[in-house]
Image 1 (spheres, rainbow, N blue to C red):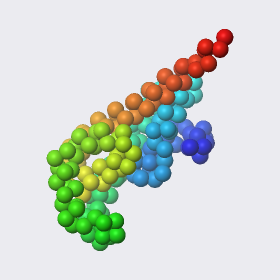
Image 2: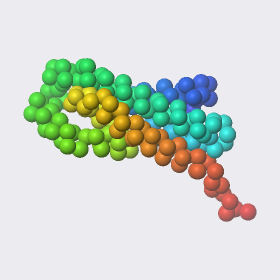
Image 3: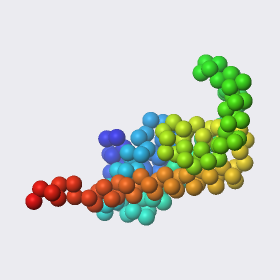
Image 4: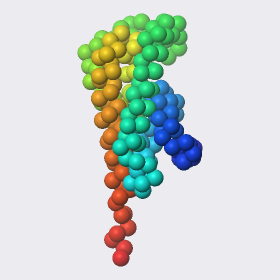
Length: 167
């Protein structure tokens, strides 16, 4: 997290965008902690809250789209070639796709709040052939909800005087 703090202090909003996009793709970025920190910085007026929310939303959505496109283009061939190494057989893939076709679109929205699930839903959406427009609608709703919740939480925690009881 310290590296993320340094990147934000040097590059500001561009760092927030890139870190969130890369975190959604699957790189080890502590996304929720990062957004809570962004909200905290907004509470200190280091960042502008509306701009921070727009940048975080855009970064998350960009990461989701990149993951979707990777899943769409390379997912199925990679699974058929290397799936056995992670115990993802064609039969298991069929079960996952069946489940995803029933519940997947809502999993895209609420999966943002579950680390790991948020990453898989992107790739599975592409692999399963979810239409890009439909995916954008659900991924956008999830990105907006997710980024707003964590940034707002950090903003309000930054405005709380935790030591006010100590007169």
